[in-house]
Length: 85
Image (cartoon, rainbow, N blue to C red; front, side):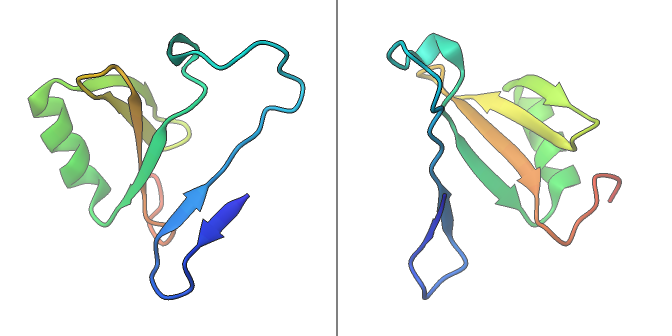
């Protein structure tokens, strides 16, 4: 489910894992924030230099950074950028 405020381009995606029986746990990596960035390559370079990238999926054109509390932050390009841009 995507939630929008109707006035900005910001979106919040809510995901429910219907078949899950046990409570969510930070260690499951099932919940995280995602950020679309205008310049994916520059963001990736910065995060790589910072050493905070914890997982990459080049086929999907995304990567994750880990925050100090060990939550994963997904970084993906804006919709108009291809994974090779």
